[in-house]
Length: 395
Image (cartoon, rainbow, N blue to C red; front, side, top):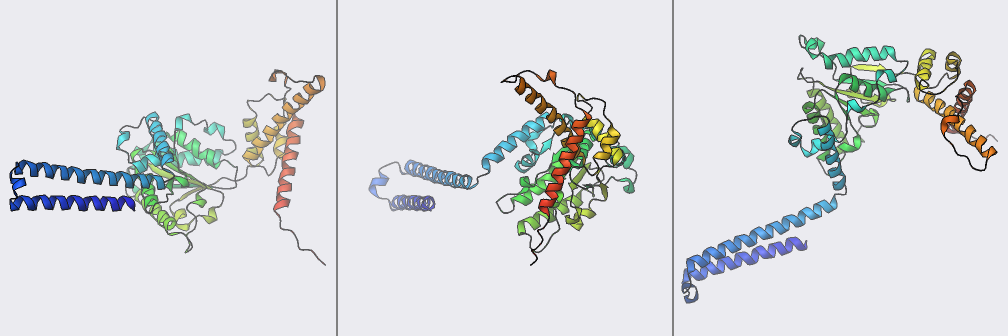
């Protein structure tokens, strides 16, 4: 308040001085007439204007300083914009300067498809799903000329991957972006949220404007149910407006058949996703728990680069029934760690200090993997028992 009061006082004093000088000049007082009145008035006017400009500048800088001090995320925004410019330059995007500040904030979520290590060969046991995705997503991106002759041939603007956790939904999304050669926006909900009223809507609009400028683009939303869950009257006003604008802009993608922008979501709770969002995702792929043959493929893929003895993958795939792809990776990790533990304990028994390299590690045996499967399943059973409600005591 002191800044505004000082500014108002300065303006009032300057105005009073100008009026006084002009009045004295008009009356023709001797002390003013004796001087070069014309030059003096011009100098006074310029000095007055300079004072007004200086007052406005000080007031502006003071208000800007207060605004910046009230925004705790300003430093993070600048860092995100700097990282976004580096990524855009790496991706070969021209005219980065034409992007708005909001688009640069969204561009911080860009991933370089060429640097992704996930490929179709990294995913085991989902051959049928991969084939469908290649025909539905990758073909329209790479052969857009085949889909311009009919409105019925337009590729879907939304794809949903759903199923139990740990079954490879995120890996499929990354492999899809790499195979399609598309720009990949791994959209984080925290990027859209802002404390200032109306800023979240501007960032939501920037998601689609940036995707159009960088097309072909895939907008990926992991755990989409946490962002676009079913709307209710209890939703916050800002959240409801953000969801509504997101869906409205999403519909705008269908008006131009030449746009190569697709929204891809992943969730393990599809029933929590808003019905209007599901309508905008006509292509839906269920990524379920792997069967026996799929588990065998996953195990062979995980252990392909490891030092192992001859393993009975058929027996391992039967023994690991009920485990997801991420569970199988954890089982293999536990088996490999058990070899290291055995090596450390053996060295500790022979000498007081254990040194050396991993060259003397023995191969991973079938028994290591069997013990790891049993240990993991016991952990799962303990977790399930811990989550079960406690039965009331009976007198």
